[in-house]
Image 1 (tube, rainbow, N blue to C red):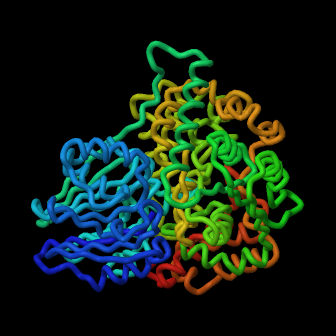
Image 2 (image 1 turned 90 degrees about the vertical axis):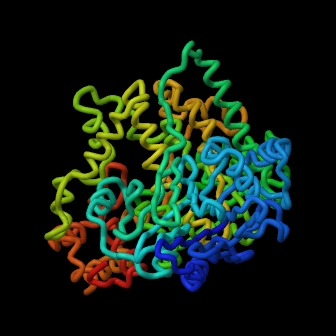
Amino acid sequence: MCGICGELGFNGAPGDLGAIARMMKRLEPRGPDHGGSYSDGALALGHRRLSIIDLSLRSNQPLVDAELGLALVFNGTIYNYRALRRELSARGYRFFSEGDSEVILKAWHAWGPEALERLHGMFAFALWDANARVLFLARDRFGIKPLYFSEQQGRLRFASSLQALLAAGDVDCAIDPVALHHLFTLHAVVPAPRTIVRGVRKLAPGHWLRIEENGARREGCYWRLAATRPHPPRSEGEWLEAIHASLREAVRVRAEVADVPVGVLLSGGLDSSLLVALLAEAGVSDLRTFSVGFEDTPEEAGSEFAYSDQVVAHYGTRHRRLHVSNDQVLARLPEAVDAMAEPMFAQDAVAFYLLAEQVSREVKVVQSGQGADEVFGGYFWYPRMQAETGGSPLERFSKHYFDRDHAEYMRLVGAGWGGEDHSSAYIGARLDEPEADEFLDAVLRLDVTTLIVDDPVKRVDNMTMAWGLEARVPFLDHHLVELAARCPPELKLREGGKYPLKALARGLLPDAVIDRPKGYFPMPALKYVRGPFLDFMRDLLDSRACRERGLYRRDYVEQLLAAPDMHHTRIRGNKLWHLAALELWLQRHLDGSGQA
């Protein structure tokens, strides 16, 4: 797990190593163990390393293979690298390191872009072919690892974070109006290739980008998710057996492929608790688990310790509890926003940030339960969508998911920021794509391939990597997801959702953990806004920078400020916090200028 950056110029000028150094400085938290750079004419690469596999100097990056004429910067983990190495060795390739990074170099030389289909893991990488004078960028199937890029003044730059590109300079920092619409309707999700900053784009999950030294480029998609029933059909027992075997394997490889200890972020919910159980079942000893909790409010408990403690007692894990007061949350909130590559509205972003700080002092790698709800239908809005009998797929979806309908969005944004209903057009087209047998098949596929990428997946990457902590997400193992996507929705939604996981958990976890109501990583102070949190948000939204920016209509802002606890989205987000979070992000990253 690392931070990568680089540039390729199209005008013959040498690579700007000063810009590379500025980007690397911004990426240092992602890779505190080593930094290195490489240049070849108009090409320059930078890398910050977090040492997880092959801790020796041989796996430091940029990784250069002079014999093949290739150079690589890579962020992520390839879980099947040992098998690929054996296959490549049999083809005559010689290896000088013991890590997974070098396997990518040889695989690309052997198979070209088709090598991506063989990679099992999470990754974003840039590979330079010095002979062909071609730069090749690629991102994993679910966008677990980020890859941003910008183009300006005859060059293309890329990096693991948007902040790194801003540090390099020469970025158009105007707000993208289409991204703004997505942001406020899709719970801060801005689907690739857009970002909130007009001059920065991101490579879509499951895609590659090939750029020649003269600026010519091609983009390709190497993976798509089918959500259709198999033939012949499977019985319920066959589905459960196959899913259980696939999940066990996903958890196992994410524990074994590391030369450092692996812990678990234990929320107390079914998903993370099941990870603990499966790791124990696989024989992992000295399990380390970590939980975080916050202050209660009259409406909602601030922790799930009552459940996580049962799992800890059941498996005898070495456990660390972190309880964070509201004063700490408010004081550290700007730091957490600084770690966000893009604005985030989810209340648990700060929770992950503060938890990751503590966890990183004890381990370098953790497994986390992100993706289980999207893959196995665990959220409360899925049955509601399924129960809708009338309307188009878009209408059935938006009624239970969109944070704001387009009419409310138009009441939110200031003059000049309105326009078309971009989110409805985008979501409608995605739901109508082929290879989904039923409406809910299309919904879950959209969620796991797009919406999750720029909400929980990005949140976990940003907040953990801010402290040099690698988060692995076994529920997004592509073999498991491909299997689950073909499973009938009614099986997944049984017993309130995630039935295959609940069935697997019986006998492994206390029934109280399995049968508890669905929890959401709680931080009540950002959901029920009052006291110092309300003062903080009011100051942001009344600030000169916010008023001069003109994004928000004042009457809409005043309506939310007058009743901050009363305005929540369909999926239980606080609308006032949405406005404040974006404004805080803009002020922290773009200096609060009127042209932000």
